[in-house]
Image (cartoon, rainbow over all chains, first blue to last red):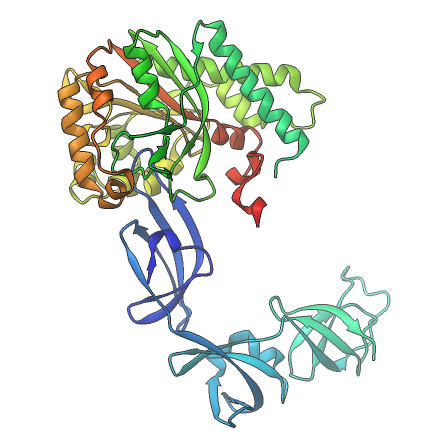
Amino acid sequence: MFSASDLRKGLKILIDQEPHIIVDFEFSKPGKGQALYRCKLKNMITGSQFSNTYRSNDKFEKADLEERTMQFLYNQGDEYHFMDTSNYEQLFLTGEQLGDNVNYLMDNMEVQVLFFGTRPIDISLPIFVELSVTQADPWARGDTSGTDTKPVTVETGYQLQVPPFVVEGDKIQIDTRTGAYVTRVKE
Amino acid sequence: MLTAEGLQFRAALFHLVRSFFSKRGFLEVDTPIRQPVVLPEANIVPLRAGNWFLQTSPEQCMKRLLAAGCENIFQICPCFRAEERGSRHLEEFTMLEWYRVASDYLELMSDCERLLRFVLNSLLEIGSGQPIVVDSCIAKMVIEQPWERLSVAEAFSRYASCSVAEALDQDRFDEVIAIEIEPRLGRGRPTFLFDYPARCASLARLKNDDPGLAERFELYIEGMELANGFSELTDAAEQRKRFAEELVKNEQSRKQAGGVMPERFLAELEKLGRAAGIAFGLDRLLMLLMSADSIDEVVSFSPSDWD
């Protein structure tokens, strides 16, 4: 059990039997008044957000969450299949559950799958992934658009902006938190 | 951790505050931080120090000094309140507290205006070429704008989704103040929010012409609460009754504070003449002057400096 004074950004609690993460938190206490714990919460299953204000006496149950290391196998349409390499157990998550993470999933990649009880609800990726560029147009010299980046496509099909010197076949590092190019990887 | 420049700025502010009060004949006092009994307040939880407590404010000692015959007094001291932590709260913070004899809350409001104008004018004078320059918007509004005096009832009708009575009935008074009203106060000019419902002021005198209201005010600048002042309740029997009410309101606070009546304080309260006192958060004032987003940025060491 958590009490209101445990509330803070990043804490995961159970509300209406579903896991929620506190994405924004503010403590306030107007002059000699009650302590107020103002939270913006995100439902970790549906992604929907809402705000609520709690009081000192409120109590919260801990969300039963567990992370397991699993390997990404393949996707079949919208189903993304993963395997626990210790016991060969397989499961899938949908593209909707994975969101932008599908942009960085490579066969055999190790990811952390988040379980709520026995139910997989999300994955977390390494912060940086390395992906090969499968399509890059040569940078048009004299481009007057004023930008110093160009679009490329990587092996997962994800498109992003990179510096002009990146060519087809290069391996590049991408920040999975932002989806942005980080650097070209020397082979 | 505060930089050398920050420490200098903080010291300059403290120095100016002291000289403001000294010039006006206030006596600077220093009272014990550790005390065997706290004044019961439902929403303030003290920290324990052995079998005693760390002060949540110097109010108890300073009023006893008044009762013992002291006239106008002030103090700058650390105060401690358990479980208060946020961008504007530290469990240990610095309070400026002053008391005026033969006076009331209106005079304290004028004190606030005079104090902040003196501090800001002085900081602006020594300011050029200093590593830390006072936030110019704050300086301008404090020095040049007329300060607003807004009653709690008027603030509710102007900014809130319900009346004071409705908020009190639903036990939402603090919530409405914090969420709907506070962010709107002190914008463009400092605001005094005054005349609180009687039940929100356990140590304040009630108004003669309206016993439903207490002579209490808060000062706000840029949506931030800076100070809480009131005309002192000096009727010991009435004070005992209010303490008893506070004691039953909050179990956690009562447990932490031992649930004891401050008998010595109550006995001496009878000797206290007409007086008014105010608690002013100096760390918060520094936040405003230095444009800091968090109270951690204006103290020498915050909890995160120990990680």
